[in-house]
Structure formats: C-alpha cells, structure tokens
Length: 330
Image 1 (cartoon, rainbow, N blue to C red):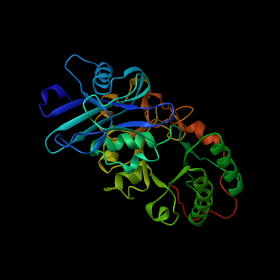
Image 2: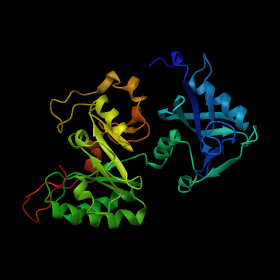
Image 3: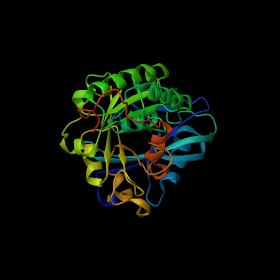
Image 4: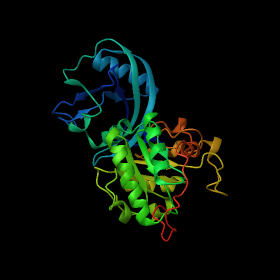
C-alpha cells in the first residue's frame, strides 16, 4: 500500500519509553483533539523524507525534552477509524537522556505493566499493550512419560524464566488432557505464568486455563473470537491470508511458520530467507511469533526463532495411563 497517496492515512512514529524500573511513560491527550482525554504512548506524524526513527527522535524531543539513545522495533499497527486510517510504527525506547517533561502541557505518568490496563487508550493502542504484556519467550510442550514428569519440567522451565506455556498434546484422551491442564494451571498460576491450551473450545471451557491456541484447521472454521478479552487467544498460521484472518477475528498473537523446513510439517514450503510477508505483515494488527529455531520471541518477528527446541525444554512423552480414545489437542 502506498500510504502517501491516501490523504486520509496518517503514518505515526510511537515511542514506548521504559525507565530503569521497567515502568512505561504514557501521556494524556488534550480534550480538544481526536481521541481527546485518552492516554497514549508519545509520538507523532512522520514528515515527508523522515525515517521512522528520525521522526521518533524529533517528536520525543519536542514533546518530552528527552534525547533518545537506543530503540528497537516493537510492533507495527494499522488501524481504521471512521475518518482516517492510522499506521503506528512503534519502537521500544530503552535508553535516553533528560528528564521527561510535558512540553506541550500534556499530563505524563510512569506506570507499571501490571497497572497499565487500568488506563483508557485509543483502540489503535491496544495491540501495543498486548505486545508489552506478552512475555518475550513462549514454551510449547512436547511428549512426556507421565504427568509428574511434565509437571516437573514445567516447573523447571518456570524457574528459567518462562512465563507463557502452551500445552500441546494431540493424541491424549480428552479426560487426561483436561486433568493435566488443570494440574499445570495450579502450578503456572502460582508464578504468574500463563497457560494456554492447544485444543477445541469445548475442551478449553472445561479447564479454566488462561487462553486457547488454535491450529490452522480450527482457525479456518472460526469466524469470531472464541473467548473473552480476559483470556489469551493465539493461532497457528502458515500464509498471509491466515494471518489476515487471525487479525480479523481479533487474535492476540499468531505463530507464523515454518521459517525453516521441519519434520512436523513435511512438504510445507519454508518461508526462510525470502522475508515472507514482511511487506504484508504491517497490514495486520496481531502480534506475531515465528517458529523455526531456538526460542519463540513474540514481539519482534524478525528475531523470532522456533518452537522445535522449546519443545525439547519440556521434553515429554505421552502418558501411559490409558489408551487414547479421543484426541483433545489435535
């Protein structure tokens, strides 16, 4: 899309400024402007001839009297309002000099990530908050001998700092899957770790877990977000069309794969070095992770690498407790 040809399109550089305490700086929009009275992340329009980072440095200096030293891409968001389309290029600002001050009379405030949900933001800012509150790393379980082994290895992973876990077991009997999910949830909830389940919505509703993950097949059949905003909703995608559909039904994040050839998807074309969808991904508002290496990093797709080794962190095999009569995780 050529943004410059659309007079109703606004391209904005946004800074998520983080201090040494891990708090985020937010600012309140004046009442007389578009979306007035709401809180936002500082930034402003990109002028003709400016790069995103050049515009961001200029805007944060003008608005807050700070000098930006270090930034990294966080997320790019398209959002359509009735009167305009806004593209937000969002960068995490982790190093700066100066004491932030509202140069334009705007109210500013440092807030923790745990408190940020208590502030009202424009709709276009909601994916930024999701990207900030999702952890960097995402663990997907694999096979296990019995429940105790799985529980212990999940505990070990939590001890290593993992704060988001997907329970993936495609061959397990439904009752076993539900029991294991409930047992793991008792463990994860004590540490603030989120547990999402790769299963059907019917099975998920019997568990009380933190979220649901949908395979590409289930995603194709899903026409609306299946859970409330108090639950996480993630999906597996393999094409840009699937990624678009995930965004349309308001998925919180999507796994885009395979970047490299995998045994789990034989014959599936690898996205690899041709930078798939990078020109198209900006047109979705769903946070991405890209499986294909040593870890899944949810917020920065270009640096994201694979689910395979994450499964080996919780190297589990199926329980031998009962014969498998029905698949809960497929």
